[in-house]
Length: 291
Image (cartoon, rainbow, N blue to C red; front, side):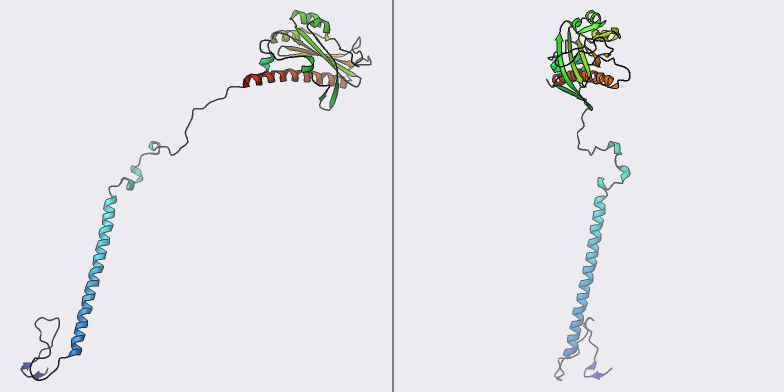
């Protein structure tokens, strides 16, 4: 400590109230300490900046906390933030599917072709030997048969022999169509008898025996066959039609069980006749369905 004029001189503190500046206004000529004054002013400004920065940080933290609290409090009453246990059960939720549902429907059953050849009332399409047996030849598998003469009569007994005329007349046969096919020295005559109802045709099938034979049809280059010789015959029916075959050799030879070609020829023509009657029913059923 030093002593000057007017007693002891105290240290000046810019932050201490009532402290004295380190110079006097006397006439001793002493100048103020400008370096000390500049340093004190800089220290004072630095402290103010620190105070303002600290206050800003605290204010920012406080605002962030307040916002977070506000968000939490605002969500506490929202239905969307409830736990899944409080949601309705799956069965109570509306369906997410946008596809409309329709009651099941069923298409009407297809028409039965046999119904259209089972009675005269429905079987109204035109018919003839050339419609039933079209073309000039018939191919069945690897076998080709040449078409020969045809015949059509409303007197069924005239185209039959043995016990068949009586069977046909008893059941009111209205028409008998015949056609002959040949393959080499084998000839087959097919006879198709027409009735008003399926029941009549079925009776003919059941009443016919081994002597109920359709008469072989010759001409147009087909030699006589099955005229006294042993031949192979078949009987069947479909719908209101009864159909018969007789197969033999054009050279007059008897048919034996070893003559498999004769059996094949008769079966081929019987099968084709069935197919043609069935196709007749299919055509009429289709036309009725589209009308």
